[in-house]
Amino acid sequence: MKLKIGFPRALFYYLYFPFWHTFFTELGFEVVCSEPTNKLSLDLGVQETVNDACLPIKIYHGHVAELKDKVDVLFLPRMVSVRKLDSEVFCPKFLGLPDMIRNSIEGLPRIIDDKVDLSKGFYPLWRLSFRIAHKLDRKGWAVAAAFFKANKAQRRFSAYLAQEVPAQEAIYAVIGGENLSKSVEIPKPDVHLAILGYPYLIYDAFINVGLLEKLAQMGIKAWTAEMVPPDRLEAQGKNLPKNLFWHFSNRTMRATFYYLKEHKVDGLVHVTAFGCGPDAMVDKLMELESKAHKRTPFLTLSLDEHTGEAGVLTRIEAFVDMLRLRRKGNEDLVSYHG
Ligand code: SF4
Image (tube, rainbow, N blue to C red; front, side, top):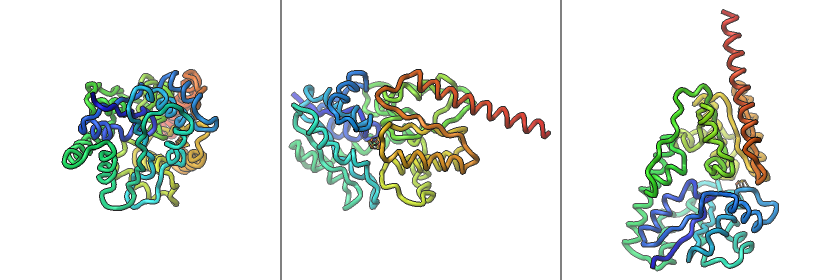
């Protein structure tokens, strides 16, 4: 029987699952993913986590609690940095996550929690992959072959994201679990919104109460950070007077500059988790940048475990109504002045 490796469907799942799923599967393991976030994951997470943790961390605990009795090994890497020669790291909660999990949840199976730090040394991902494979009794060419296939899968995934395919659909397409369902096409959207924030908030439809789907139903085109071509996103770094230290915070700010300066949108929505330390700063910076760029309308959507569908919908509808009125006002002004 194949060894089962558990992968929680939360946090870095939305960006790196295609790589690790392919890598472990090619090495002959069965990868078991937790269910999409639901009421049970939330309840388990709230029960197992310290009170002042942010919502995504609670949800992650819930996914681990759901998986722990179904797998032989849990893959809970310690995410430190994914950028070469950079001082940018993941937020402290990511850095301490395996320790938080060990101290909060009882009855855990074996855990693989190797440090993912791609900032230093030669071929860090290659060396990390071999180290992890070695722990699972896999060596040699089989590991090299799995690594190359995993890299290819990850590149395909990035290409899907750049083609505006939502993350979960792109993941299904790459790992071959389901056919790529066509992303919702909006015939002629009259409003374009940049929906920015951490991928685990933007793409987890339970946490954000189906935000992307609702926008599509309202005929609004949502643009996310993952849709920005990587080189264009990278180039926006020069607009930041100072590195913000945290990986996803920098990424959100780079996307903010891109959508404000290069790819016109009608408004900016920052999706944030209540209690997120890094976002306290990011939210203010985004607000200031929006004002500086022709007073582009800006909305903060703060999510926590009590967030309800009606609340999010009402705020988005009011924001979009304001954008449409604003545009109409501008058109009336133009026609008045002839
Ligand atoms: S960046 Fe914010 S939302 Fe994400 S894990 Fe850290 S504190 Fe939580």
